[in-house]
Image (tube, rainbow, N blue to C red; front, side):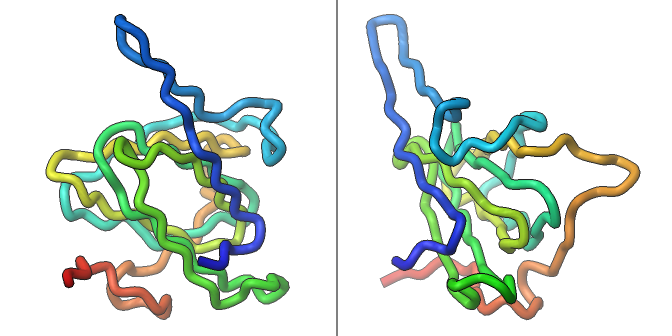
Length: 153
């Protein structure tokens, strides 16, 4: 898969012991780290699609800490060398990764586990309630060339 320009994937390492385990997600010495805005959790129920949207300013850092999600990115940026490229990531307990989503890249997610999935995001900007940094599109009837249905076979 050709990765969208500015997207970074970091494999996360579980450090287990007899008490449980620890998993680092984002560090200030990661080569792609820019700055910290806030952190939050977003939960999706099984089969639910949350998307599409992109941010004008902020960069997102997604980690799925419970369950599994399909996270899809679409690059529609005019000045990008990967304009028109779509990326699909299957993330969560069975594939612990962090993905960096640059501003201007459309993204959405779908819970693909049998239980609710929990996403932790550490964006570079705090949420501005008076002027949200978000452009939204319908996940099923928009202009983004993606079908959220399950692909059997």
